[in-house]
Amino acid sequence: MGRPQEFDTAQAVRAARRVFWEQGYAEASMPDLEHATGVGRSSIYHAFGSKRGLFDAAVASYLDEVVRPRLRPLYDDPVDPDAVVTYLRAVQAAARDTGGTHGCLLINTATSPLGADAVVSQVVAEYRATVQDGLRRGLQARFPERSSAAIERLAETCTALVVAAFSTVRADPKGAARDLELAIVLAEEGS
Image (tube, rainbow, N blue to C red; front, side, top):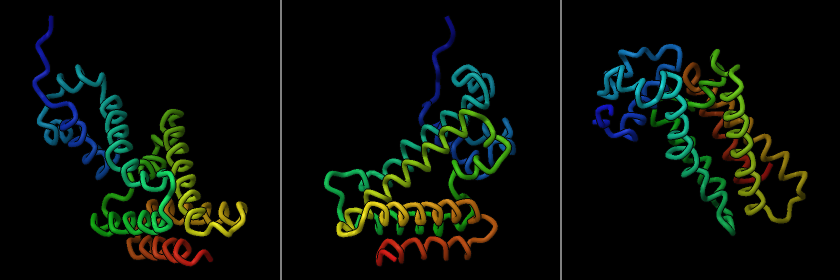
């Protein structure tokens, strides 16, 4: 029988998530992960199987603790007509609060070599679809008189602006801020 685990798994995953989010999967070294988590390499491998296993746990944590809570109001029944603008402002604030250094863990990963991995690709595609569906629901609540086609185009446009902002925020924070501001204006005014 092995030794019992002596660390808080969720806390270690959150610490690793910060490293992956800031540095990317490839650039995150095992010493960096050990230092951030306070967990030795053998314990990381025992608990997660590999660096990739730890990364997958970090992505699951990101979805559960960052993405889904932010999207939740767009999936209420009924959706508050202001939920879509509130969501976009929260995204804008998150991008601003990190100084453009973090972006989005999933979009950062999608634009890295790991983005070609089938599992990662599916997670990113599902994330994008969930964001677009949430925006569509929020826009329908905000503009109930609009046609489904008009709402869908607006949701696609806002989603594209969010993804563009996340993918460029590290290199061009001001441009990303403009993309998010445009998405907010579109959500507020509907055109």
